[in-house]
Amino acid sequence: MSPKKNSIILFAVVFMVVFVSATDKAPALIKWIILKDCTVRVNGSTNINKFSCSIPEYQRSDTLTCYRPGNEVPVVLSGRLALPVISFDCNNSMMTNDLRKTLKAKEFPSLNIYFISLEKYPELNHAQEPITGLVNIELAGISKKIEVNYRFSMDEQKIIHLVGTQTIRFSDFLLVPPRKLGGMIRADDRLDVIFRINFKRIADS
Amino acid sequence: MKKIFLSGLTAGIILFIISYGGLYTAIHYFPSFFVDYNNPLFNSNGDRDILFYSHAFIFSFALSWFWERFKGLFKGHFILRGLEFGFVYGIIALVPVMWITFSSLDITFTMVSSWFFYGLCQAIIAGIVFARTNP
Image 1 (cartoon, each protein chain N blue to C red):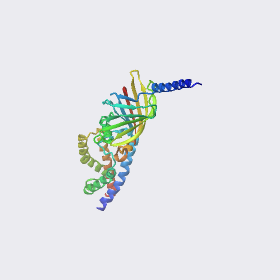
Image 2 (spheres, chains in turn green, blue):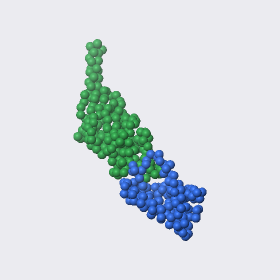
Image 3 (cartoon, each protein chain N blue to C red):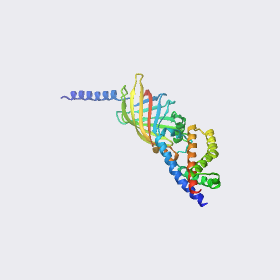
Image 4 (cartoon, rainbow over the protein chains, first blue to last red):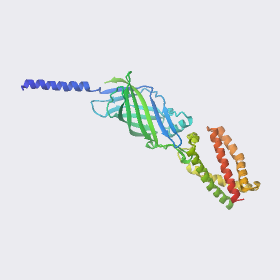
């Protein structure tokens, strides 16, 4: 093979590699704006009943930033949800007040969810895609890194729907599960947290 | 004094078993009745459990002293004396206390009625014990 032919082949290979990697690579920085119709629900139980409390509507337009310099995994996220604990509603005023008291709403008015990473960048199509990710949950002044199970999907309006579920424990945040009448009525330490967040992609850079 | 103490202690032990055993059983079999206790009005961190569980003895010693002072007023069979004693306590202590409790706290009528019934049963049982141990 002649040196000229070799050079052409080499050039073609380099060109293809550069072209393919340039077109395949996602934008380095993706911003998702959190839409206002987001909810957070906690499900728990006591030895006499089950309860379900939710923050029905997230009122802030926070932004999540997704850093994706290449095809590296995990994908780095930054941004947070700051949820007002006082907005928890258990459809029962007594239980609502009890949960707020247990979560120390007066001292620590916000439940913060800091997004850290995703195991991979979601495909973002109609089908729900399960992805795990790391978040830092800050509750009652205690911060804990937790792996969350997400399901990502995107609808026709290009709105990204994220459903995150995870079980946490009161004791993880040094909270005492409510107990009444000398412990005869007591709440389970486990709380199932489900958050539904809707995003819209706003900018790439 | 010894009689007051001994009959108070006896009534306290019996009431402890019946009251907390009954409460435990009621919570187990009628859980929906206790849902309203998930309320910040009720202590929830356990630091007063000792006070909660000593109530049977505080109640018994107080009523034992009361019995010693007024037992001459209760005549007849020991069960009848205990019943009358319980009803007297119910009328002069429980009704006014439950009245002010219901009027001032955010609790249900069912809840306050159950407290009245619970206190009345305790006083009747204590009265029967006193009528037997300190006639």
